Amino acid sequence: MLDAATRTRLVSTDLALGAWLNRLLIGVMVGYAALAAATTMVMAALARRRELALLQLVGVTRGQIRAMVQAEQAGLLGTAVLIGTTIAVLTLSAIVNGLTGSPIPYVPPLGWVAVLGGTTLLALTATVWPLRRLLNAPPIDDIGVKE
Image (cartoon, rainbow, N blue to C red; front, side, top):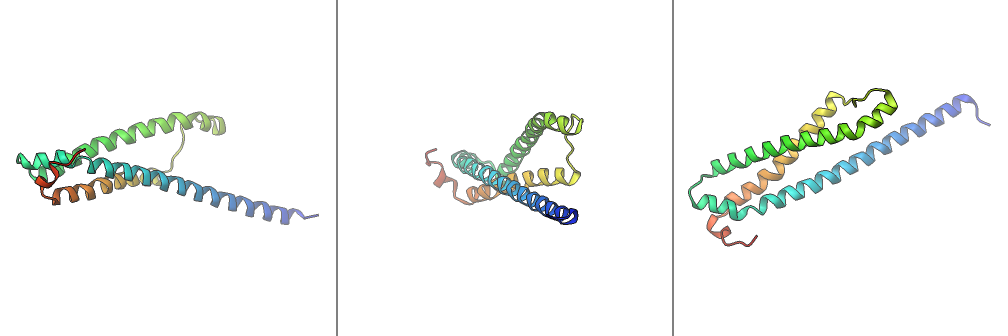
């Protein structure tokens, strides 16, 4: 039979291991979701090669194309963050209300910064690099590409 101090130590070790495994699982899921989102955004950006080539051929400058794509991305990013936050609050509010009695889930400020910063970085990275690649190619080469 174990004494109380030994049991407490074993339980705390199990809880610490469980917390570490939960963080690892969440990290893997977030990484997979980020990879899937980045792949989708890169493919969507590369699918616009014909459109961007046509814009260049009619006289739109590379700077104007970059500004257009950045404005599109800002609008899409804002919409995605708003919809994602709304869905998360609606989904989690029932669970949080049952556990804590508060209908509003609490997210620490560093959590908000990590989510918003990571989302912004992912969106910019997954569109800037393909756009740079597309704008460096001669537009006449891409105008005849099938979608």
